[in-house]
Amino acid sequence: MPLCSRYAAAAFTHAGASRTELRPGTRRRQTLQPGSTVQSPHLNSVAPAAGPTADRVLRVTNLGKHYPGVLAVDRISFAVRRREVVGLLGPNGAGKTTTINMILGVLSPSTGSIRIAGIDLARQRARALAQANFSAVYATLPGNLTVAQNLRFFGLVYNVPRLRARVATLLEEFDLQALQHTKCGVLSSGEQTRVALAKAMLNHPSLLLLDEPTASLDPAAARTIRARIRALAANNSCGILWTSHNMYEVEEVCDRVLFLSRGRILLAGDPRQLPRLHGVATLEELFIRLAREPLSVHAEHAG
Ligand SMILES: Nc1ncnc2c1ncn2[C@@H]1O[C@H](COP(=O)(O)OP(=O)(O)OP(=O)(O)O)[C@@H](O)[C@H]1O
Ligand SMILES: [Mg+2]
Image (cartoon, rainbow, N blue to C red; front, side, top):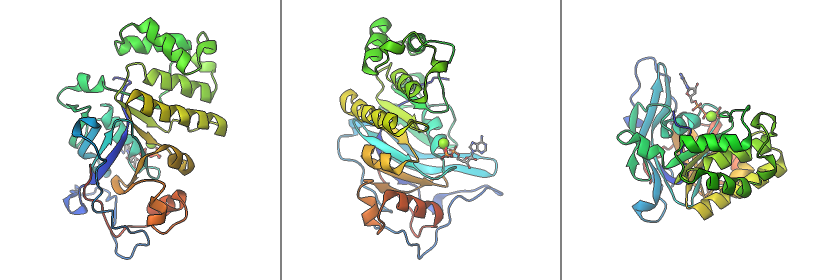
Protein backbone atom coordinates (compact mmCIF):
# COMPACT_ATOMS: atom_id res chain seq x y z
CA MET A 1 0.00 0.00 0.00
CA PRO A 2 1.57 3.28 -0.99
CA LEU A 3 2.08 5.76 1.79
CA CYS A 4 1.34 8.60 -0.48
CA SER A 5 -1.44 10.88 -1.42
CA ARG A 6 -2.38 14.41 -2.22
CA TYR A 7 -4.72 16.86 -0.69
CA ALA A 8 -5.98 20.15 -1.72
CA ALA A 9 -8.82 22.49 -1.57
CA ALA A 10 -11.98 21.82 -3.33
CA ALA A 11 -15.40 22.49 -4.47
CA PHE A 12 -17.91 19.99 -3.25
CA THR A 13 -21.17 18.30 -3.85
CA HIS A 14 -23.41 15.78 -2.38
CA ALA A 15 -25.85 13.61 -4.21
CA GLY A 16 -29.22 14.28 -2.65
CA ALA A 17 -30.83 12.18 0.03
CA SER A 18 -33.28 10.80 -2.48
CA ARG A 19 -30.45 9.03 -4.22
CA THR A 20 -29.17 7.40 -1.08
CA GLU A 21 -29.81 3.69 -1.12
CA LEU A 22 -29.54 1.87 2.15
CA ARG A 23 -29.52 -1.84 2.49
CA PRO A 24 -31.85 -3.32 5.05
CA GLY A 25 -30.43 -2.76 8.49
CA THR A 26 -28.06 -0.04 7.38
CA ARG A 27 -27.75 2.90 9.73
CA ARG A 28 -29.08 6.01 8.06
CA ARG A 29 -26.56 8.79 8.50
CA GLN A 30 -28.70 11.87 8.09
CA THR A 31 -32.18 13.00 8.98
CA LEU A 32 -33.45 15.97 7.04
CA GLN A 33 -35.93 18.03 9.00
CA PRO A 34 -37.54 21.38 8.31
CA GLY A 35 -37.07 24.19 10.75
CA SER A 36 -33.41 23.68 11.50
CA THR A 37 -31.63 26.68 12.92
CA VAL A 38 -28.80 26.17 10.48
CA GLN A 39 -29.91 26.93 6.99
CA SER A 40 -28.32 28.47 3.96
CA PRO A 41 -29.30 29.35 0.43
CA HIS A 42 -25.90 27.99 -0.54
CA LEU A 43 -26.45 24.46 0.64
CA ASN A 44 -28.14 23.10 -2.44
CA SER A 45 -25.74 24.52 -4.95
CA VAL A 46 -22.17 25.36 -4.17
CA ALA A 47 -20.19 26.90 -6.97
CA PRO A 48 -16.94 25.16 -7.85
CA ALA A 49 -13.72 27.06 -7.36
CA ALA A 50 -12.90 29.26 -10.30
CA GLY A 51 -10.24 28.17 -12.75
CA PRO A 52 -9.61 25.68 -15.53
CA THR A 53 -10.42 22.00 -15.11
CA ALA A 54 -6.71 21.21 -15.55
CA ASP A 55 -6.10 22.95 -12.22
CA ARG A 56 -8.07 20.30 -10.36
CA VAL A 57 -5.69 18.04 -8.51
CA LEU A 58 -8.54 16.04 -7.02
CA ARG A 59 -11.98 15.26 -8.34
CA VAL A 60 -14.26 13.00 -6.31
CA THR A 61 -17.60 12.02 -7.80
CA ASN A 62 -20.43 10.22 -5.96
CA LEU A 63 -17.88 8.65 -3.66
CA GLY A 64 -19.43 6.24 -1.20
CA LYS A 65 -18.34 3.60 1.29
CA HIS A 66 -20.61 1.26 3.19
CA TYR A 67 -19.83 -1.42 5.70
CA PRO A 68 -22.38 -3.94 6.91
CA GLY A 69 -24.87 -1.80 8.79
CA VAL A 70 -22.92 1.46 8.38
CA LEU A 71 -22.95 3.98 5.57
CA ALA A 72 -19.61 5.66 6.30
CA VAL A 73 -19.51 7.92 3.23
CA ASP A 74 -22.67 8.69 1.31
CA ARG A 75 -21.94 9.59 -2.32
CA ILE A 76 -20.08 12.83 -1.94
CA SER A 77 -18.59 14.90 -4.75
CA PHE A 78 -16.03 17.64 -4.54
CA ALA A 79 -12.89 18.98 -6.17
CA VAL A 80 -9.62 20.47 -5.04
CA ARG A 81 -7.48 22.86 -7.02
CA ARG A 82 -3.79 23.67 -7.09
CA ARG A 83 -2.60 26.09 -4.39
CA GLU A 84 -5.84 25.62 -2.50
CA VAL A 85 -6.10 24.38 1.09
CA VAL A 86 -9.45 22.71 1.70
CA GLY A 87 -10.58 21.72 5.16
CA LEU A 88 -12.53 18.50 5.56
CA LEU A 89 -14.42 19.07 8.80
CA GLY A 90 -16.94 17.09 10.77
CA PRO A 91 -17.61 15.39 14.08
CA ASN A 92 -16.05 12.09 15.11
CA GLY A 93 -17.25 9.35 12.83
CA ALA A 94 -18.36 11.75 10.08
CA GLY A 95 -16.39 9.90 7.40
CA LYS A 96 -13.31 12.11 6.99
CA THR A 97 -10.64 9.43 7.37
CA THR A 98 -12.68 6.99 5.32
CA THR A 99 -12.80 9.56 2.52
CA ILE A 100 -9.07 10.19 2.72
CA ASN A 101 -8.29 6.48 2.77
CA MET A 102 -10.32 5.95 -0.39
CA ILE A 103 -8.43 8.79 -2.09
CA LEU A 104 -5.19 7.16 -0.97
CA GLY A 105 -6.24 3.85 -2.47
CA VAL A 106 -6.14 2.22 0.95
CA LEU A 107 -9.89 1.52 0.90
CA SER A 108 -11.94 0.51 -2.11
CA PRO A 109 -14.97 2.75 -2.66
CA SER A 110 -18.40 1.14 -2.75
CA THR A 111 -19.52 3.75 -5.29
CA GLY A 112 -18.11 6.59 -7.30
CA SER A 113 -14.81 7.63 -8.80
CA ILE A 114 -11.63 9.48 -7.84
CA ARG A 115 -9.34 11.38 -10.20
CA ILE A 116 -5.98 12.63 -8.96
CA ALA A 117 -4.40 15.24 -11.23
CA GLY A 118 -6.84 14.05 -13.88
CA ILE A 119 -5.85 10.38 -13.58
CA ASP A 120 -8.53 7.83 -12.71
CA LEU A 121 -7.46 6.02 -9.54
CA ALA A 122 -9.38 2.83 -10.35
CA ARG A 123 -7.92 2.51 -13.84
CA GLN A 124 -4.37 3.82 -13.40
CA ARG A 125 -3.71 3.32 -9.72
CA ALA A 126 0.09 3.62 -9.70
CA ARG A 127 0.12 6.70 -11.93
CA ALA A 128 -2.59 8.38 -9.91
CA LEU A 129 -0.98 7.66 -6.53
CA ALA A 130 2.40 8.85 -7.79
CA GLN A 131 0.78 12.30 -7.91
CA ALA A 132 -0.19 12.22 -4.25
CA ASN A 133 1.25 11.98 -0.77
CA PHE A 134 -0.02 12.16 2.79
CA SER A 135 0.70 12.70 6.42
CA ALA A 136 -1.47 11.48 9.27
CA VAL A 137 -1.02 11.55 13.00
CA TYR A 138 -1.79 7.82 13.20
CA ALA A 139 0.68 6.86 10.43
CA THR A 140 3.92 7.30 12.29
CA LEU A 141 7.26 6.77 10.60
CA PRO A 142 9.40 3.78 11.62
CA GLY A 143 10.88 4.81 14.97
CA ASN A 144 14.04 2.72 14.67
CA LEU A 145 15.19 4.58 11.54
CA THR A 146 16.82 8.00 11.73
CA VAL A 147 15.25 11.02 10.08
CA ALA A 148 17.58 10.78 7.08
CA GLN A 149 17.10 7.01 6.79
CA ASN A 150 13.33 7.43 6.81
CA LEU A 151 13.46 10.02 4.06
CA ARG A 152 15.78 7.83 1.98
CA PHE A 153 13.60 4.77 2.56
CA PHE A 154 10.40 6.50 1.47
CA GLY A 155 12.24 8.18 -1.37
CA LEU A 156 13.08 4.70 -2.68
CA VAL A 157 9.45 3.63 -2.21
CA TYR A 158 8.35 6.63 -4.29
CA ASN A 159 11.16 6.13 -6.79
CA VAL A 160 12.36 9.71 -6.30
CA PRO A 161 15.08 10.69 -8.79
CA ARG A 162 18.34 12.23 -7.46
CA LEU A 163 17.27 11.10 -4.02
CA ARG A 164 20.37 12.22 -2.11
CA ALA A 165 19.91 15.82 -3.25
CA ARG A 166 16.15 15.70 -2.61
CA VAL A 167 16.66 14.47 0.95
CA ALA A 168 19.25 17.21 1.57
CA THR A 169 16.83 19.85 0.31
CA LEU A 170 13.99 18.59 2.50
CA LEU A 171 16.22 18.38 5.57
CA GLU A 172 17.01 22.03 5.06
CA GLU A 173 13.45 23.13 4.20
CA PHE A 174 12.00 21.52 7.29
CA ASP A 175 14.80 22.50 9.70
CA LEU A 176 15.77 18.88 10.18
CA GLN A 177 19.51 19.01 9.53
CA ALA A 178 20.42 18.90 13.22
CA LEU A 179 18.10 15.91 13.69
CA GLN A 180 19.00 13.94 10.60
CA HIS A 181 20.92 11.26 12.53
CA THR A 182 18.34 11.02 15.32
CA LYS A 183 15.96 8.06 15.40
CA CYS A 184 12.39 9.11 14.70
CA GLY A 185 11.11 7.18 17.71
CA VAL A 186 12.66 9.67 20.14
CA LEU A 187 11.54 12.85 18.40
CA SER A 188 8.95 15.15 19.93
CA SER A 189 5.48 15.33 18.36
CA GLY A 190 6.32 18.58 16.60
CA GLU A 191 9.58 17.21 15.25
CA GLN A 192 7.86 14.03 14.04
CA THR A 193 5.25 16.13 12.29
CA ARG A 194 8.00 18.05 10.47
CA VAL A 195 9.60 14.77 9.36
CA ALA A 196 6.21 13.42 8.23
CA LEU A 197 5.61 16.56 6.18
CA ALA A 198 9.08 16.32 4.66
CA LYS A 199 8.34 12.71 3.77
CA ALA A 200 5.04 13.81 2.24
CA MET A 201 6.84 16.24 -0.06
CA LEU A 202 9.44 13.75 -1.33
CA ASN A 203 7.70 13.10 -4.65
CA HIS A 204 6.59 16.70 -5.31
CA PRO A 205 2.94 15.71 -4.92
CA SER A 206 0.17 17.54 -6.74
CA LEU A 207 -2.23 16.51 -3.99
CA LEU A 208 -1.34 16.45 -0.32
CA LEU A 209 -3.66 14.73 2.15
CA LEU A 210 -3.20 15.74 5.77
CA ASP A 211 -5.26 13.97 8.43
CA GLU A 212 -5.08 16.03 11.63
CA PRO A 213 -1.45 17.09 11.09
CA THR A 214 -1.44 19.42 14.10
CA ALA A 215 -3.12 17.10 16.58
CA SER A 216 -1.00 16.81 19.73
CA LEU A 217 1.19 19.79 18.86
CA ASP A 218 1.72 22.68 21.26
CA PRO A 219 0.38 26.08 20.05
CA ALA A 220 3.76 27.33 18.89
CA ALA A 221 4.61 24.14 17.00
CA ALA A 222 1.11 24.06 15.48
CA ARG A 223 1.52 27.64 14.26
CA THR A 224 4.83 26.78 12.61
CA ILE A 225 3.31 23.75 10.92
CA ARG A 226 0.33 25.79 9.69
CA ALA A 227 2.67 28.34 8.13
CA ARG A 228 4.60 25.55 6.45
CA ILE A 229 1.45 23.99 5.06
CA ARG A 230 0.29 27.29 3.61
CA ALA A 231 3.74 27.75 2.08
CA LEU A 232 3.64 24.23 0.61
CA ALA A 233 0.42 25.04 -1.21
CA ALA A 234 1.70 28.41 -2.43
CA ASN A 235 5.22 27.43 -3.43
CA ASN A 236 4.76 23.88 -4.64
CA SER A 237 1.55 24.37 -6.60
CA CYS A 238 -0.05 21.48 -4.81
CA GLY A 239 -3.58 21.26 -3.50
CA ILE A 240 -4.12 20.26 0.10
CA LEU A 241 -7.02 18.44 1.73
CA TRP A 242 -6.74 18.81 5.48
CA THR A 243 -8.73 17.53 8.41
CA SER A 244 -8.71 19.23 11.79
CA HIS A 245 -10.90 19.65 14.83
CA ASN A 246 -9.32 23.02 15.62
CA MET A 247 -11.62 25.65 14.13
CA TYR A 248 -9.18 28.47 14.88
CA GLU A 249 -6.54 26.92 12.67
CA VAL A 250 -9.08 26.00 10.03
CA GLU A 251 -10.01 29.68 9.73
CA GLU A 252 -6.36 30.61 9.48
CA VAL A 253 -5.28 28.00 6.97
CA CYS A 254 -8.17 26.91 4.78
CA ASP A 255 -9.36 28.67 1.67
CA ARG A 256 -12.49 26.59 1.82
CA VAL A 257 -14.12 24.05 4.09
CA LEU A 258 -16.45 21.11 3.60
CA PHE A 259 -18.61 20.12 6.55
CA LEU A 260 -19.13 16.39 6.60
CA SER A 261 -21.69 14.77 8.88
CA ARG A 262 -22.77 11.16 8.86
CA GLY A 263 -21.01 10.62 5.58
CA ARG A 264 -22.59 13.54 3.78
CA ILE A 265 -21.46 17.04 2.88
CA LEU A 266 -23.81 19.46 4.58
CA LEU A 267 -22.12 22.74 3.92
CA ALA A 268 -19.18 24.29 2.12
CA GLY A 269 -17.62 27.68 1.78
CA ASP A 270 -15.13 30.22 3.06
CA PRO A 271 -14.52 29.50 6.75
CA ARG A 272 -14.28 33.22 7.47
CA GLN A 273 -17.67 33.95 5.91
CA LEU A 274 -19.74 30.88 6.80
CA PRO A 275 -20.45 31.81 10.46
CA ARG A 276 -21.92 35.21 9.50
CA LEU A 277 -23.93 33.65 6.66
CA HIS A 278 -25.50 31.29 9.17
CA GLY A 279 -26.07 33.81 11.92
CA VAL A 280 -23.52 32.51 14.38
CA ALA A 281 -20.47 34.19 15.86
CA THR A 282 -17.75 31.67 15.22
CA LEU A 283 -16.85 28.70 13.05
CA GLU A 284 -16.74 26.57 16.18
CA GLU A 285 -20.34 27.49 17.00
CA LEU A 286 -21.39 26.64 13.46
CA PHE A 287 -19.54 23.34 13.68
CA ILE A 288 -21.31 22.41 16.91
CA ARG A 289 -24.72 23.26 15.48
CA LEU A 290 -24.07 21.31 12.30
CA ALA A 291 -22.84 18.35 14.29
CA ARG A 292 -25.81 18.33 16.66
CA GLU A 293 -28.79 19.53 14.70
CA PRO A 294 -30.50 17.95 11.74
CA LEU A 295 -30.53 20.21 8.72
CA SER A 296 -33.44 21.27 6.61
CA VAL A 297 -31.40 21.23 3.49
CA HIS A 298 -29.00 19.00 1.71
CA ALA A 299 -26.19 19.84 -0.61
CA GLU A 300 -26.69 18.74 -4.16
CA HIS A 301 -23.83 19.83 -6.28
CA ALA A 302 -20.55 21.58 -6.59
CA GLY A 303 -17.11 21.32 -8.11
N1 LIG B 1 -13.88 -1.12 8.90
C1 LIG B 1 -15.01 -0.57 9.35
N2 LIG B 1 -16.10 -1.32 9.59
C2 LIG B 1 -17.25 -0.77 10.01
N3 LIG B 1 -17.42 0.56 10.22
C3 LIG B 1 -16.36 1.37 9.99
C4 LIG B 1 -15.12 0.87 9.53
N4 LIG B 1 -14.26 1.90 9.39
C5 LIG B 1 -14.95 3.01 9.74
N5 LIG B 1 -16.20 2.67 10.10
C6 LIG B 1 -17.24 3.61 10.53
O1 LIG B 1 -17.36 4.63 9.55
C7 LIG B 1 -17.68 5.88 10.15
C8 LIG B 1 -16.71 6.93 9.69
O2 LIG B 1 -15.44 6.72 10.30
P1 LIG B 1 -14.19 7.68 10.02
O3 LIG B 1 -13.00 7.07 10.65
O4 LIG B 1 -14.12 7.97 8.56
O5 LIG B 1 -14.62 9.02 10.79
P2 LIG B 1 -13.81 10.39 10.99
O6 LIG B 1 -14.67 11.48 10.42
O7 LIG B 1 -12.43 10.28 10.47
O8 LIG B 1 -13.84 10.54 12.58
P3 LIG B 1 -12.73 11.12 13.61
O9 LIG B 1 -12.94 12.62 13.67
O10 LIG B 1 -13.11 10.48 14.91
O11 LIG B 1 -11.37 10.74 13.15
C9 LIG B 1 -17.69 5.63 11.66
O12 LIG B 1 -19.04 5.45 12.06
C10 LIG B 1 -16.89 4.35 11.81
O13 LIG B 1 -17.31 3.62 12.95
MG1 LIG C 1 -10.54 10.37 11.37
